[in-house]
Length: 228
Image 1 (spheres, rainbow, N blue to C red):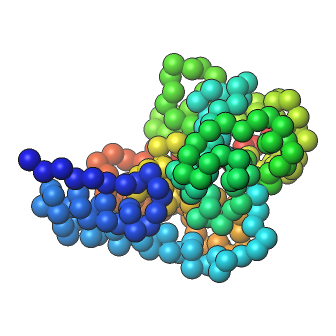
Image 2 (tube, helix red, strand yellow):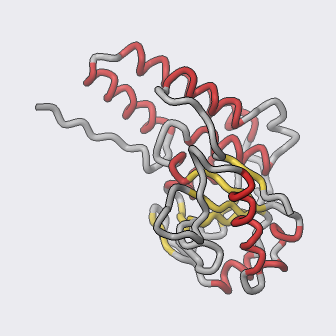
């Protein structure tokens, strides 16, 4: 019996690499693991190499979309989606409020006062709640868009900078804590820094990952900008 401990939650490049290689060695698929790691590392470094500690960083708020637009859901600081946004070069409005490395819910007032420049909502197949943001395989863009634009109906949200400029996006919740998180990092970075990230196509790279490493074809909606 072998016990292998992995860490994909911290969203740390080194942890991702070591975890994947550990699985590869355990399963006797070392070359395969190395191939995946090489692809993944290139995707991450294609973003981080262009950031150069840019300041000021654009502010963002990211929220789990399981409860839908009517009820505020949890967010993260320095872990999972919070770390993804940080790696992409953004400034998380939850930092200093939510304990680093934890998840929690911000007050309505905190979100409004922080006035984030970008808002990201994560979606998945949360079938028990028809109001949730659904994303992923089998989900069309029309339905994703309808849920995203409904967030503008939240009290005070129509006055937030992100909503005024149309900067609200959906991302598949399952991208976090997996080797597909590179596409979310790229997606956020291309929104934060469109000039610096020219030539990076997050969805095309996610499709390539499917073609090379997954037993299923890419389809559905994984990364999306709301259309008002």
